[in-house]
Image 1 (spheres, rainbow, N blue to C red):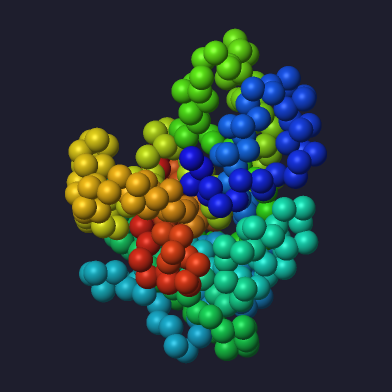
Image 2: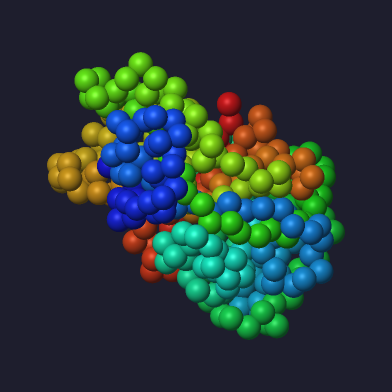
Length: 313
């Protein structure tokens, strides 16, 4: 089942048919229909922080008086990863071919801030996601800060600020999440897996300046990010033994397998941020910083219960 099982027909029918016909893969149609996920690609804009309240990665935040710059458990300023102007993103995706579903997952206005703190391991990175729900951007003020924040301190480099813009798209399971090889072998042909790879490559069009995304499939090799996130959110740990971690979660849900699967199916990747030389972001071995949230919390605008990790090969 797709994590976004409530949205099975994101891709326009004509586009889906074109892909199936182009790669002569009718046997893949049910799989493609059932495993689509909404994706918002975040694309680099102008460098700088001059436009207060604009969506951007890096640099320092534009904050209202009500919000303070988050500090780590050791009293250091966390690093701003992203600030997203939700009204701006909504305007950029609503007029697109399939931006309606994407739009429904985000608040209509306000600012969403992502900060990262101590990161001793790749899992359960200290972080804060703050949501300011007001629409009046004149209340925001750029918080200039000359010293290094936590992640800047690692390499003694100030992260450059770059504006970002949104582009609505659709994504099929990537390498880590694909289960095409598990489909009925009587249905598949010798070329099915290769054709699926070609379809995903075509759908994986990346603007030259794509530097992150909202939703979609997390970059990785194992396709277990939702299990890891759920394990930390409910049990505070993950043992890297998936069967054991799943059993531990099942115990938490009183042995209700359907309830556990529903919970796993409703963990969304809220934000993924690429390593980026222009900004200065280098997540370990040029990996990805990822934030996850439960669908229930996302739709309710509760961003205080999230999970942050880094995928690095």
